[in-house]
Image (cartoon, rainbow, N blue to C red; front, side, top):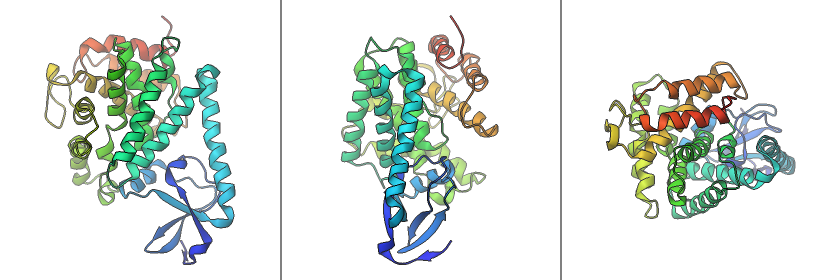
Length: 333
């Protein structure tokens, strides 16, 4: 890494615009103590692990050489459009608006996680986009399975949260919940469920074998809801999802060890989506896969299916698994 001092040589680019796993089209710089340090070379990727580290440090922007700015911005626009077109090909041209809204929500969520703390402006924008997305996604003319397919798996906290939110709404609909207010709360709760995890201090996040990291993970539901409660316009239902998404039906979860009907029903829905998403991401990482295949999906489905009331409300498991099998497992029914 080499120091660069001339302020006029560099331009800021929002971190939210970057796919952490995509190879860069130019060198990337960080501004540290008023010095510009080369962080990544052309052809490198930021990586999801480093992306999460940036979020924990509230890094909202990175820098490129001013002479390369136009090229980088065009590349970012092209990369976003490529993602949109890939998803449209999967879910159909008639659902393009849903796909585009999903990408907008992802960028807003990145920005929200990168802020030092939640603020009224970011929450208001996120709520507005979430309501529009859910309203469109829950229309009768749209196959509800489309919502589940609007996923682009990535191990970064923000990407994981968007995917979990999409799957949570889908599973809720599979389990018979269709009221707009309920779906909005489920979606918002799932988007914010790992907010506390995104704010684990960087020095702890960097050492996952340290006991402090394990404790921070145990504490992240309480930490997340503590920050969310500072915002007056986030519903109590959303707060319950955030703080209870790691509680288990048998009482072995955390942070409070709640059990059975003592756990908020929509927290159980988000929990299933979260576990499903985590397993898919873990399998992809183990096998160095860029995209999950049917075998990976089916392994994740089996974990939910064979749970038998240990982690999840047994009332929801069969219908949730039927939905996952039809959308991800390539099963026929």
